[in-house]
Every structure is written in C-alpha cells, then in structure tokens.
Length: 68
Image: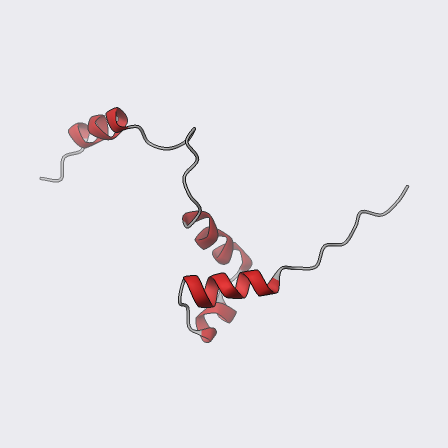
C-alpha cells in the first residue's frame, strides 16, 4: 500500500492572509493557534448560496428579536 502524498503547509498563503488581509501584527499572527487562523479564514470566505440567509428569514429573525 502506498503512502499518501505529503502536502507542505501553505505558509505563504496563510501569512498573506493573516498579515495582509487581516492586518494582524506579526506578534499577533505568530501567537495565533491554527484553530484561530482557521476560524478567521472561514469568517472571511464568501457565504455559500445554500447556507446564505434569505431576506424572509432575516425579517423573521428581526421581528422575533427586535433591537429596542
């Protein structure tokens, strides 16, 4: 049975995201855990049309939970 291919960690892309797009200072980036970086990445990905909130659903939520 053959071994699965080893894929190197995408440091260039992760650093570009954390330091560039998020604007984290280097100390913050290097202190972040992989789980925190992953959560930040997921928060910045475009919403999938299948999971995006529909206008009617938003109105129902706003009616059920008014800001006042």
